[in-house]
Length: 133
Figure 1: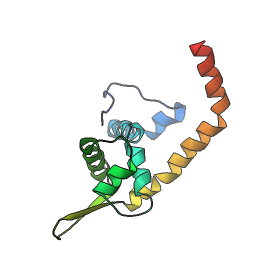
Figure 2: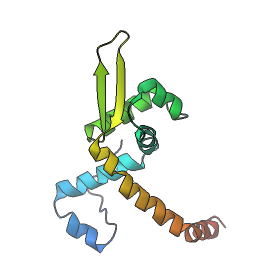
Figure 3: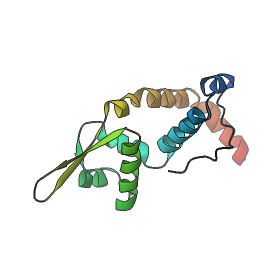
């Protein structure tokens, strides 16, 4: 997860600055945007939406993700409180990951983003076509 530089002026709209007056709040918003917009986080969150899943099942459910990247992504999501990790004292050891209550609440803004994208699909595609000309 790569955060934007602290000096980056990140403004979605004029009201965003009013919501993020504290520098620590702006940094957190940038961090969360970076986390949720990386290549793998949303795939992991989607794979965990149905309930607890073992690491190997996640690997199989997310095509193209490496062991190292899945580990890094899970740790980042766990650090931010979106995913929990439960280790069971069995032989062989069993570890399961699941969305926390906080992680589950992420579905609402993700749906809003998907809805926005679908509403503006034609405009985006037209703009890309003009640009790529």
